[in-house]
Every structure is written in C-alpha cells, then in structure tokens.
Image (cartoon, rainbow, N blue to C red; front, side, top):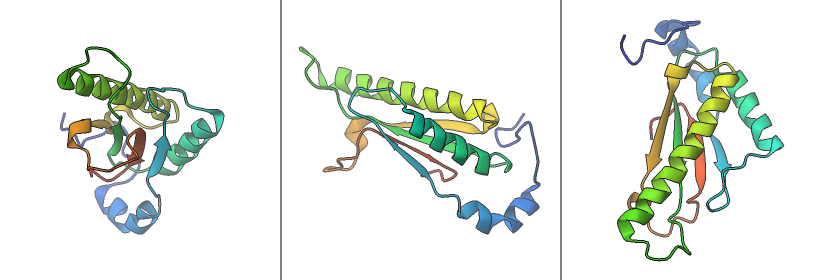
Length: 138
C-alpha cells in the first residue's frame, strides 16, 4: 500500500484542497521539555487532545519533529555517543507523542516522526528540547 494511502479517507484530495484554508488555520503545536525529560503534564496532554480533535478528520500526514539537546554531565562521552543519546531522547519523546495522537483518533500510518541530530541544529538555537506537531514537512 502506498505511504500516502491512509486507512480512513473522510475527505478526498479535492475536498482537502477545498478545505485548505481551514487546514492551514490549524497551527503547529509546540511542546517544550526540560533537558533529558520525557514527562507530559495534564495541560500538555489536553493541548495534544484538542489539536488531534481538530486535525483527525483530514487525510493528511502529521509530522512529529522532535529535537533534543546533547546531554551533559556524563563522563567519557564522545561526540558521536552524545549525538546518539540526543537522538534516542528525541525519538523516545516522539514515540510518546505518536502514541497519544493514536489514542486520540489519528491513524497510525498518518504519523511520521522526524528527529533532528543536535549537530545539524542551527547554531545559537536555544529551543533544543522540543517537539513540533504539524502537517508541514519542514
């Protein structure tokens, strides 16, 4: 089955095009984390639920962009290992968000997790521990 052929098709591509303005009005959801933290508070879970409720009727891919900063305070941590740990943290956070979105009615095959390695992040970017849930690829 093609990657863009989702299980449920509440709207055709033409209908989505006609509803594009409404879809564009659904802003990306930004979630911030403390360094090395995975916890989601009640308010954050509620925000995810509301966002999922607005978007779930559209047959569009949903991207979970997950960013994590390099861990510090660990002895003998090479640059490669530090990057690997940051990617692992970002992926685990992304999986938590993916699971929550699935519980709130988003089809599993609509969800795409993307992690950004810390070494590829913009210099001086202070928002390194965050997730952005959006319908936009980048």
